[in-house]
Length: 174
Ligand SMILES: C[S@@+](CC[C@H](N)C(=O)[O-])C[C@H]1O[C@@H](n2cnc3c(N)ncnc32)[C@H](O)[C@@H]1O
Image 1 (cartoon, helix red, strand yellow):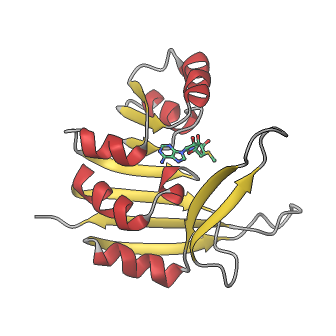
Image 2: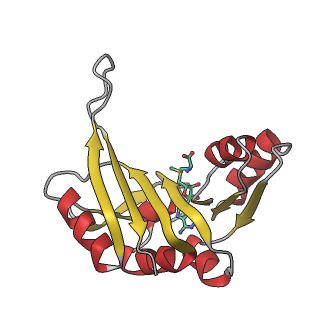
């Protein structure tokens, strides 16, 4: 299993404790340090610091599943991410993504400024937001089958109303 943008590693650690080989990649050395501190004894977990696309380009491992939980798949151009994930999956392997749904009318690449210090330029974070039918079409265009794209509603008993966009697709067999 490959976790793109694993952050502090909770999801990869969970899979490792279930007996799977869980590989996590993240840009942030701080997040990975937390993962090592918190889950260091979870055998079967392997962490790499770096960019998800560069990791996919540089690995010879072919995975049963590639997933991203509000992670790198949201922050990489799907025109680059989807072919890289396709190449990193075995035929029949699963790609699964969660992220926030798009804000109505705001589609494609969205940029946010994140404040840093008073003497520093803000950081710029780009993310890619699309409607469900556009995600489905993109995944099919890059060779995925059995595509499902849906928005899981926010829990009814909470104050939050924004749900979670879930995408699942299978790499075509050969
Ligand atoms: C919102 S956090 C989610 C972390 C984790 N998946 C979780 O569920 O807790 C997003 C993570 O994606 C990482 N990230 C963003 N772009 C990335 C990229 N291009 N390559 C690798 N990691 C990336 C960030 O460093 C951050 O740790």
